[in-house]
Image 1 (tube, rainbow, N blue to C red):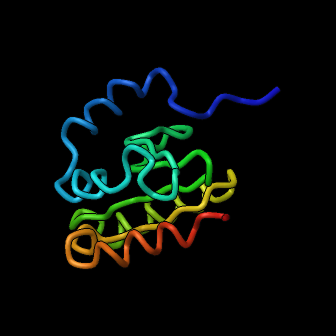
Image 2: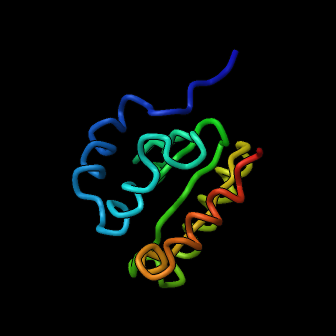
Length: 120
C-alpha cells in the first residue's frame, strides 16, 4: 500500500496562502514555468510533499525548485533547508535551489539549469 504524501488536506489553506502571498521572484519565475512552457513539462506552485510545501514541483520529472530569499541566508535556516532537501531527496525527488535575485539577474541560466534536469 502506497502512503499518500502529496498535497495533504491539512496543508491546503497553507498552500493557498503561500500562492496568494508569493514573492516577486516566485511570481516572475512562474510566468516562465506555467502552461507547460518548458519542453511541455507541467509545474505546480506551492505543492506539498509530506509536511513540506515546495515552491515549484514538476511531477513528470520528480523535480522540485526552491527559491531562497534573505530569510534563508543564516545558519539556522540553511541547516533546516539542508534537512528538508535530504528528506525530499531520500523520497526520490531532485531538489534545485536558486536565490531570488538569480531569477531576476540570470533568468536564462536559471531556466537552462531547470531544463538540464529533464530526463529527455
